[in-house]
Length: 291
Ligand code: DLZ
Image (cartoon, rainbow, N blue to C red; front, side, top):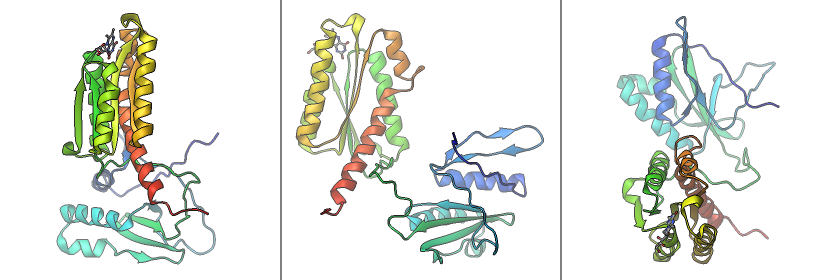
């Protein structure tokens, strides 16, 4: 089973490594596992798609490290800002190329971070290139508005879910003023608050957070069924995505695990699902009619 592909590239110096690490950080690359074994060090960066291209015959027309992007012009201006902050003004024009068409139906620019390392960024002009067969949501929350409905019952858990959700939204680009938090007494009250928010059209998606613990909750099944049904119904009837972050646990320990201790943070996951759903809704409503 092939899992991925890693290109290992040596750069000229520790300074070059630090500069590249800074640039990749500015571009929002997910950091991989860095290492330092005394004789050398490495910085790893992850991208959703890996591609190893072997060429015979004429030499490649592009730098050995190419980053495929969407919104090439925006990436160019991020790189330019980074260059302005890290290089002398006259160097920027020399080291950073303009965006230019390629012979393979794409546009590309290069940046010479160091004499040992030229990096290329490109975007295909073919709208079908690299597109997955499915419509998929992006995970950028920039420009999106969210409401989080969080139950006070079992606050030791729900506060952690709330922190997880806020962390996910912030790290995905949402601004604080676009995130409204609504506290309700218990999980039972979540659907009603969620529906009021959805009907007000004040947000693009709602993240619902609560915690029901079987051992401590009378009529546990009945409450959970109603809460889940109410949230689902609000979503379907208003058309506003509602992410379900209401934990149903056997014990407090299990709830803690799911609120960031051992099994991830379900608040974080619910917020990511909300971002993805807003993106999917936007893509689907922008899609031309298919006959
Ligand atoms: C009453 C109750 C119980 C027993 N258990 C929980 C729980 O585990 N989690 C939760 O969020 N809320 C619980 N509640 C409170 C109800 O959700 C609701 O707030 C009250 O019954 C008032 O309507």
